[in-house]
Amino acid sequence: AAAVVVASVGALVTWLWTGADVSTVGKEPFVNEMAVPPLAPSRVEKDGTRVFDLRMRAGRTEFRDGRWTPTWGFDGTYLGPTLRAERGEKVRVRIRNGLDEASTVHWHGMHLPARMDGGPHTTIRPGAARSPHWTVAQPAATLWYHPHPHGATERHVQRGLAGMFILDDGRTAALALPKRYGVDDLPVVVQDVRFDGDRFDHGRRIMQNVGFLGDRTMVNGTLSPYREVADELVRLRLLNASTARTYSFGFPDGRDFSLIGTDGGLLERPAPMERLRLSPGERAEIVVRVRPGERAVLRSFPQDDYGDAWQRRFGGGDDSFDVLELRAAERLRPSPALPARLAEQETPDGGGAVRARHFDLRRSGINGRPMAMDRIDETVTRGATETWTVRNADGMPHNFHVHDVQFRVLEVNGAPPPAALRGPKDTVFLASGTTMKLALRFDGPADPTTPYMYHCHLLYHEDEGMMGQFAVVEKGQRAGTPSEHTGHG
Ligand code: C2O
Ligand code: CU
Picture 1: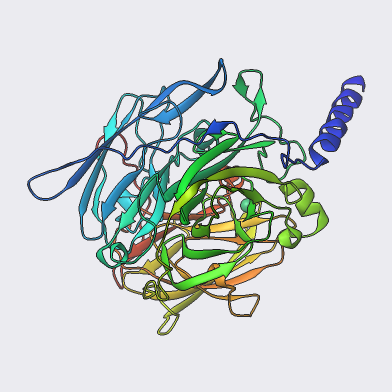
Picture 2: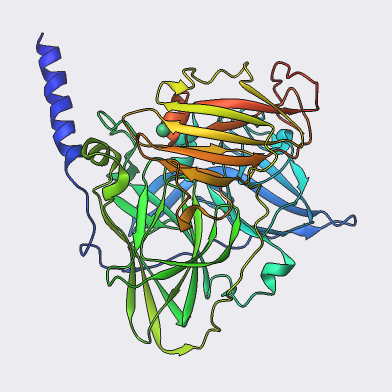
C-alpha cells in the first residue's frame, strides 16, 4: 500500500510539474551563434549519379560551456549535414551504421521506390552499410532524413539523428528568392530538449500523452541561438524535428512574413501571415523582412486552436519559446521583391480519384489496429489517384504523415484549406475532432512485398503503434507478406 501511495504522489507531482506552462520568452539571452549544418560533400560518378556518404555514430556534444552530452549524429556528433540534389539527378547515399544497435535512414518527403525509403523493413545492422539510390523526380523542396526503426524512432531522433535534404530545380533556381545557403537562406531545425546534469532527460512523460516535451528549444543543435544577417529578406527553412511538440511561429512585434513553401515545395504564390503552426515532421519556407540594425526574434506562441484546454496542457500548446534571434546589420543588401508567382502545383486535385479511403486516428492505432510489421493494411494501384479522409477521433492531438507522396489538402472540416495548407504536403496536424480530406497520387514503382508507412509523426505515438503500411501494386496484383531487407542493398 505504501508503494502505491508513493507512486501516486509521484504521479501527482509529475502531473503538477508538467502541467505548468513552460516559457523561455524573455529569459534566454541569445548568446550562441547559430550553427549552420554543413553541406554534405558529394561526388558525381560517370553515369551522373551523385554519391553521398553518411555515417551514424555516437559521441558527445558541447551544447553548454564545458558540459558534454552523450549524443548521436550523422558524420558529426549531433544532427547531420545538409544533402542537396537536383530534380532529375540520380543519387545514392552510402549509409554506414557506426552505432551499436540497428537503425534505418528514412528520406522524409522523398518520392522513391519502397526499398529505398528506409522504413522499418530496411534496417542496417551495427557495422553494416546500405546504399539506397533513386532518381529525384519532384520539385525543389526542403525535405529531411531520420531513422525509422520499428518501436525506436523517438529515441533515435532524440539522440540527434536528423538532417535536411534540400532539392533544387531549374525553375525555382531562376526565381528571385533568397538562395545563398547559410547567408540569406538559413536551415532552421527546431527541437525541444531537457537536460538532467550533462545528459539529455527524455524520461518525463507520465500523464504527457503526446510523448516527450522539452523545456528549451535549440536550432540546428544550438541553444539560445542568434544569427547575423545582412540582407533585407531572409529565407528560413523551418523544420520541426521535435518528437512531439508543435510550434506556432511568429514574431512578437506582430510583423508578417511570407510563406513561400510547405513540406514538398513552393506554393503557387507567397502567402503573407503572422503565425504558422508546424507539428513534428512538417517543414515550411518563410521569408521575413528585417530592418537595419534590429534584432528580430522568431518566437513560438501559445496555441489557442491547438485543441481544448486539456490537450493544450498536455500537448504543450500553452508553452512559448524564444527560438532564434536574427541580428540585422546596420547596412543591409537590398533584396529583390518576392516573385508574385512561385510554382505550378503538381499535386493531384482529386479529380479522377478511383478510390476513397478513411483513416481514424486513435492513440491505440489507426482504424482500430496497432501497427503490425507483417501486415500490409492498404493496397493501392500504381498510377492511381485516391482521396484519403483522415479524422482525429481521439481526445489528444495527432498528425498524419504519408511516405512516398506529396499530397494536396482538399478540405479541413469540410471547408477549403487555409493558406498554410495550400502547398504540397506530406504531414498534417489534426487537433482533436479535426477531419481532413487529402488527394494523393501513387506513381509507383510497384512492389507488393515492400510497404510504405503512414503514421502519426508524434514519435511516441508512432512507436506505440499509430502506424499502418501500404503497398503499391500493379492493377490486379495482390500485396504479399512484407519482406525484410537487412544489411546490404
Ligand atoms: Cu519522418 Cu515515417 O517519417
Ligand atoms: Cu499521435
